[in-house]
Length: 289
Image 1 (cartoon, rainbow, N blue to C red):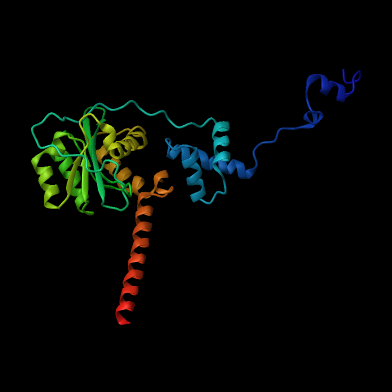
Image 2: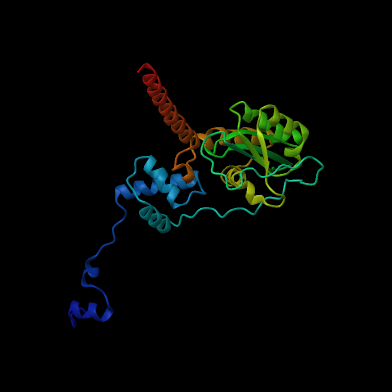
C-alpha cells in the first residue's frame, strides 16, 4: 500500500498526524521514575493520603512538584487510597444517672494549645478478643496527649488516658460525648481537681465531637487496618508506637499546613515565646524611660 499511496494521503484518511509514524514511545525519564518510586513509597506508608497530602510530603522531601502532576501520575500508576472501613459499633452508653454537662465548644474558635481537649473511645477486634482504645487529643495542635488500651470498656479505660494526658498539660475545657465513662464521678472529679471546665456533646449528636471521631478514624484506617496484632500486648506496643511516634512526629496534617503535630506545636510555641520576649523587652524599656 505504501507504494501506491503517499504517506500524507494515508495519514489524512486514517486521521493521524504524519509525525505519529515516526514516533517511538519513550519510557519515563530517570527523574520521573524516581518520582514514581517516591510516590509509591509514600502511598504505601500512608494508604489514606490523597494526592494533595502526597504532594505536600514530596515537597517536604525536596521534590519540586505540584499537585496536578502528582494527581496525573497517581492516575497513570493506578494508585488510589483505600476505601474507608464501615463505621465501628457504638461504644457510648449515655443511659446513666450521672450529671450531664452543656456543650461549651459549640461554634468556638480554637486558637491555642490546651484550650480544648477532646476525648473518645473505639473498639479494636483482635483474633481472640475485643479491646478498647481511649484517646485524649488537643484540638489546636492535633496532638494526642493521652491514650490507653484496655480489655474492658469501663471507667479505668478513660481515666488512665486522662491521667496520662494530664502529665503533659492541663486544658481549659475537656469535651466528650455523654458516655458513662466520661460522666462517672472519678473522671469528673479528676477534671475538677485540675480546674478544667467540662463540656459534652448532645446525646446522639456525634458530629459535636467531630475532632475526636476524626482522629479515631485515622488510627483505625492507618494503624489498625494495616496491622495484624498477635494479642493485646502486641496491639498495645504497636498502637503506642503509632500514636506517640508516627502520628505525632511523622504524619502531616492538612489542617496544620502540612506539618506534623509536633512541628506545628513547636513552631507555635517558639513564635509566641519570641513575641512575649519582645513585649517584655519593650515594657522594660518604657519603664526605664
